[in-house]
Length: 335
Image (cartoon, rainbow, N blue to C red):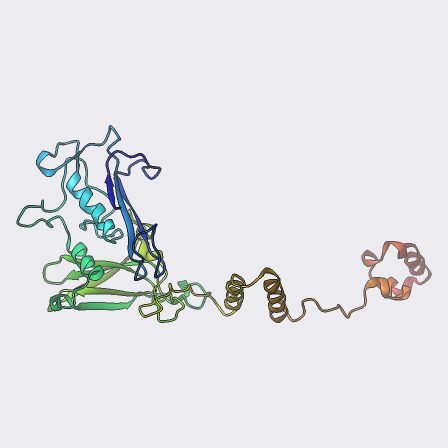
């Protein structure tokens, strides 16, 4: 059951939070909540609930017609939360409905909704996002796509390891209509994924479902302002394969640790004794010298003369007196 709650306490209502939406999605095909329908694709929304902080006496919500100087625009907040309801994350485009911060009390950003234009508050970034999430095969007017890579001017600024990092991660890439100057869409890039993986952090980005027949200016900027990459979940989400079996992509690992990771995954399906044996075999393969008997002779096994030939700080305690006497008898033997 999907619900909208106006008077329910929740730990997520930290200072400054006006409303939030709790969304549960499927991480595998067949996942379900209780007796609800099973998911048919990865990322499918299984449940979504909206919560408003109406129990806070210092917060007042109002519709545009009754918007007072100290009230928050209920229409804007509800439309924003309904965006999460249908699968949106936040947007770093300030004019978008999915921008994570609400306008000041008593104000309403964008055009107000009307019977003739009920989606008036939506920005072009919101509309582009809807077309990406719910594409229509017959929509040929919005079939444009822009893609590329964001790389640093100085390649030495990239980390030396792991080897899959070849571009900037979590760059905010924006497409602007060259004629009107209007922001049409923004995205967070930084990685790409080709079946079966692993993810490559190569600075890749793609902006789909753009209006065709237009010219665009594209720019990239770091998310180091009021909106951070952590507020945009797609920036931190591993890629998902686009063809069956639709597995969640693996993060990049180098050749040294990849075999060990696979060994741990195999242990989950094995019995404890078998897992211990296989782990021991893996360690022997990874470290050929591990477990072999040391062939060198210990100090205790050496002759007294050999032990005394070592520097005094390496003498054994039981040999100290005899070695000291030998040194006194042969003062020229040690430099």
